[in-house]
Each structure stands twice: as C-alpha cells, then as structure tokens.
Image 1 (cartoon, rainbow, N blue to C red):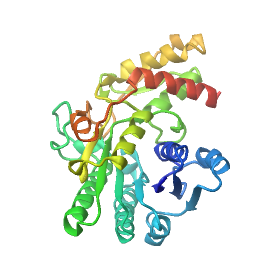
Image 2 (cartoon, rainbow, N blue to C red):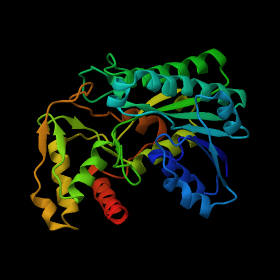
Image 3 (cartoon, rainbow, N blue to C red):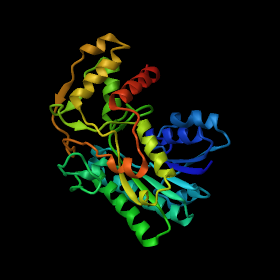
Length: 325
C-alpha cells in the first residue's frame, strides 16, 4: 500500500505497471504528456480505480511538472522517454531533451522529496558496438545512435547522484526488446513485433531489415513487470544502485520471429500461414545480435522470468487478435 509515481504511465510498459500496482492496493500517480502514451491505455484504470489512480498531464522537460507529480510519493518508476533508434537519428535534439533533460528533472525532483527508491527504464542499446555475447552489465561498447547515448547518460547520472548525494537509491533496468499487450502497432516508429503482427493480421507481408538473421532477446511484458517489482521490494543492500539486464536470456532471429507469429496467428486466420516476408536493407544504428546474461538479476534480485519468448508471443498474439480485429 505505497504511493507510487509512474512517469510515462500511459505508455506500453508504464500502463502495465500502473495496472499491476493498482490491482495490489497501491496509490498510483501517472505523469504523461501523451506524445507516445495513449489515453485508451489508462481509461479503464481511471474508471476502475477512481480514488487510488491519479493522472497528471505534464511533461518531464518541465521540472515543475515533475515536482508536482512526485509530491508525497515513496517510489518512482521512470518509464517516460522517446524510444526508437530511427527517431533519435532523425531528431537527436528532441530525443536528448526528453531522455536526458527529462531524466535529470525527474531525478532532481525525486531526490528533493526523498523517495525511497528511483527505478528507471534503461536500455540494451547501451551495449552499442560490443560484440560479446551474452551481454554482461559491466561490459559495454560505444553507442551506435543518439538514443543509445541518452540511455547511457541516464545510467551515469543516476550513479553520480547516488555517489555524490548519498540520499537516493536507484535501480536501472536495461530492457531487451520488450513486447506484449498494449504495445502500439501503429505509427512511424512501431516496434518490430506489433508491426509484424499488424501486417500479418491484414494479410500483408512483413518487411524484414536485412537477411533476417539478426537476433534479439525478446522479452515478454510480465517478465519486465516482475523485474520492476523486485527492484522496488528488494531489501538486499547489494541490490540497489545497480544496473540489471531485463530479459529472458534467449535470442531469436527475425526469421524465426516471423515463423512463430505465423504459427500463432494462423490459428485465427489460416491464410496467414502462407505469407512470406519481404527483405530489405539493414537499418542504420541496429546491432546484429542481442542476448542478455540475467545471472546478476537472478543472484541479487531473485529474478525468475516466467514467460519464455514463445509463451509470451502466443499470449500477445491472442491479445492483438481480440483488440485489433
């Protein structure tokens, strides 16, 4: 029964966190400017939890909005960011303003009210051009995009605040290709799984960048929720002021991803089984392979991901079919 702030709470991951904590009798504040978040993600929460859910329409680039949102809160989950490598390449200035300037505002505001813990969305893009597999938290390369730079700077800011001031605890979660219910399939910068699902459901061929042998550690939303909860609840003093990979710990090629999506979606429409993808050039800023080592999270947080990539994908396909058709 804590008071929790979730910035970006109307987004994909943020709204799932809001729902989780509200269902467990917490008071939740959602701060969002709806640049990427969706009102439809939180309308059911507003209706179901009229006394314990509060929406603040504001921008993390405005520190006064951040201060208003954190007032009285015990835990902050900072999910607000401008995602997408291509978006950051096209408009690095806005990505920088939101992901670094906004992050710093949230960190300052959180420290001012002495929150118990600041948990934030980091990114596997931080590994950059490092070729080592699996990815281990302490071994990173040079960033390959403006987006990756911003997420690395966020980690550095959190660490400097903890070391310099000593009165704020943080946990950073490097998300690896999160997918699941409420992930938006529309828009210019839609993630690969909802984009492929939308194409296949429309009986259109998905477009794969490259030969399809690039691989990712696709991670179902419920595993990500588990990591956030563990980051909040852990009483292990060695577990705080740390960065953790947040993933399942297996990699899947884009070719295999399409194969699995066809398998699950053809249960609803048999024609989907015969759709073949279209291959195009590789995308600037993409790393060839991504695979997380989750040993640190298991050891320090007790992380035990419950959903494999296939299990999560089957659940996601069911959700999309029910909500997009």
